[in-house]
Length: 204
Image (cartoon, rainbow, N blue to C red; front, side):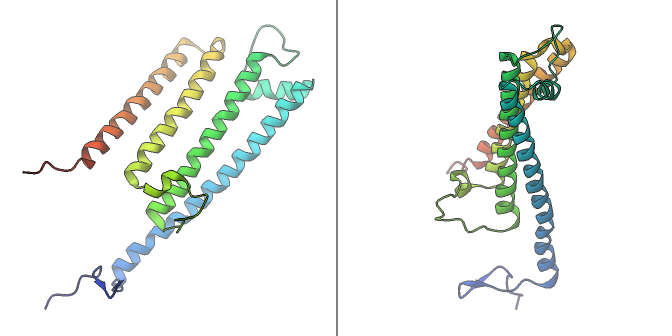
């Protein structure tokens, strides 16, 4: 008689895994410190966001020190001295804040989606705050969403570069544009590949 399938369902429950498969399957918990580390990284982003926002508000009320900190942070340079907060500086700072938010969203997708997909279920079904995308997340869906988020982040970086184009060389501008186009093509290729793989075979 052949050994029973360890994943066979018996009375609504699965048989215990053998020691080696159980060890291999339990190794998924080694990813837990990685996701906890990303949570710490997100906390750092929150602190950075609040600091930049505080500098923006202080500069709006005439603080020279906050204005200099903002100009240094965004890498804005001009031949004319900047004594007051102008529209270009505000735009670059706001784009930088949006960039932080989008990266934070990316971190959330990686932390929540990755944990749910590769480590353990969170049992969020029915929770009022459950993300809509999490109800049907899998490795393919997560991959496409991450690619889309990266394109959004790249778009913000590219826009910041174009607004502050005087401080960049033509080589940098061309390189960033080419990288952004590469991200777009990669995301399209991932989406098309997943769609082809998910297409059911033709019935004969």
